[in-house]
Length: 426
Image (cartoon, rainbow, N blue to C red; front, side, top):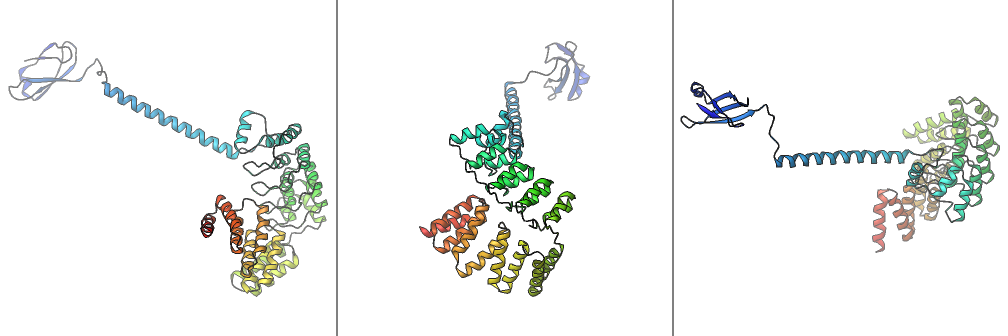
């Protein structure tokens, strides 16, 4: 039987005996293509198909081309989005962590810092460009401008030991106690870096030598921690509290732990103490308190204060025990003394607030919270609590203002209070 090749139209002879099967495979003698011969039905003839050809596959159709182009476009867009996303993430990480000590004048560096709230005055101050700083101030730039870390130009200059710039900014009225995000003042950051000339200048201008950062450290603790013996000596000569506590440790205890022998000897000569006995009494007092044995707890707290009378932590726990015992007047005295020694302990303010609120002494409560807000202007809880006191006092506008500020700083309960205060006035 003769069949026609579907590729080259050449006739191809197939033996009749082969056509007994419904499916026959043959090779075209003309083009060497493999033919598949299908017998449709008895007497109905045959059909040929081409499963394979040495000439290669046929050209894609237009729909196939469009489908391939669409898939390639989508894949390209996906890859582009991934690259852009990674670049954006990397840039954000760089912005969040980029805090150089030496602020160069490269465009990229300045661009990153300006995106973090640095003004031209911040940059000039950090670089020590006194003439440029003076020119910017004369143009009206704010000496108290804050970057995203809440730092002023004075802070950035003090951190890097830019003496002339620090002197200029102080003369132009810069706030010596302006705090950064973690509560560090210009003095604290200069001490930590060992810039003794800047430290001496700030002390001469009246900087608070016993100011604490949010972590509780004083300038003396920072000097010890950084190993700056000359700075520690300067602080002691200006009256730094040698036995101030930070995380329960005096500067001497910190020096011994870090094996700073020169500084440790200096601190001992100036009356520095370890006060282990006071710590032991405090620990035992707290254990008695948790067991409900208030009298024993108070006896231990009193013993601790006999060794270390200016321990803010012991005074705080003594005040809490006295509240539990119902001796509110004595508790108030202990808690307020604790706040004087450590004005950043939020729990002490909350307990003072509770005692005074029972008496309706709203002005006194407001004064306490205002003090904490002055030290920590981003403390949402302090604004929220002060706003509540204003509300109870009957000063709704001040209550609304504080609640709005606390809400903006992320305090969820303050957002509810803001809505409540507004609805009450409607």
